[in-house]
Image (tube, rainbow, N blue to C red; front, side, top):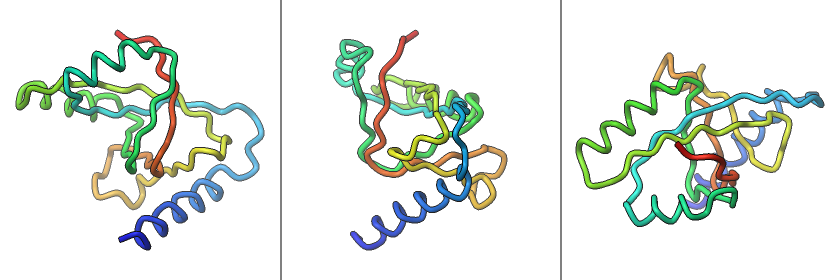
Length: 128
C-alpha cells in the first residue's frame, strides 16, 4: 500500500511540474471541495479562522462549485454531519503543495477535477 501512495504522490508532482512549468507570474484560480464534518470538528474550524488546515488524504476538488455544493447538501440530508463547501484559492506555480489537473483522465467527466497530494495545507479564510 505504501508503494502505491508514494507512486501516486510522485505522479501528481510530475503532472504539476508538466502542467505549470515555467510559470513565474501569480496565476491563481479557485477550486471547491464539499465535505461532511462532525459538529465538533466544524465548531473547532470556526475557532481557528486564519490558521492552517491540513487534509491528511488525497483531495479531489472541482473548478465548479456546484459539483461539491451538491455533495455538501447531500451530507446534511443523510447524516448528522455539517456539510461544508471549501473554496480554496490556488496559486499555480507554488510547488510545495503538489496538485494536478486530471479532468482528461478522471472518471467523472465534466467536473474539471483538480487532484491534490496528501497533507496539502491551506489557510482558513473568512467563513459564511
